[in-house]
Length: 133
Length: 77
Image (tube, rainbow over all chains, first blue to last red; front, side, top):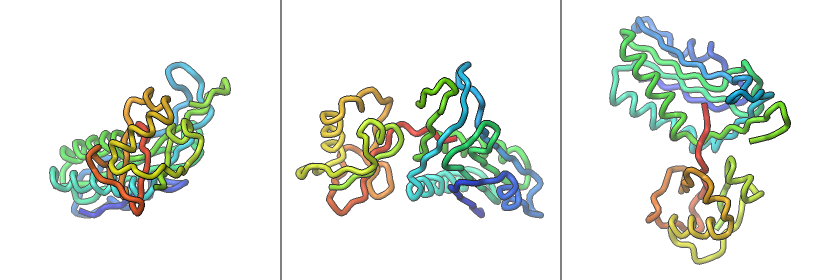
């Protein structure tokens, strides 16, 4: 399985898609997490993402290893943004490709759920009313 | 012993790096020291310690040459 891991200020859906393309794969599943303009009814101006980058990349590699053990996925890309992100901007991308679509959905869901639970990245919310949390 | 702090842990302590007193030999002892020094850590849903870039159990030994980080609840994605 080929793996692309990235934690940078700017990430794009396209670079994840470009990485997972393969003539051997008939199914590609992409999850994109984007910045929302509200949290529980409160208006949000921006998010700030901070990462413990070295460890975060290792934890992302563990997720990739778990995916490879469980499913016949050919390629996986996991990208996470850091720094200031405005509503509508891309915060995270998980993309997988496989011969058929079924396991691609399963692997993609597992990867994003696990990323959110274990990878040391933190967001700070800047609310329109001035509060930062 | 030098430790890094991230996320809300950094906000609670007010610093991104701190020097711990001598005599802390395990992850559990480090957590106990942190909770005593900064009671606000009690409010967090979880408090994990990473040793050399991996989550560590309370029983794991720590030394001054280890890379140690305070990991509050993660919130990526």
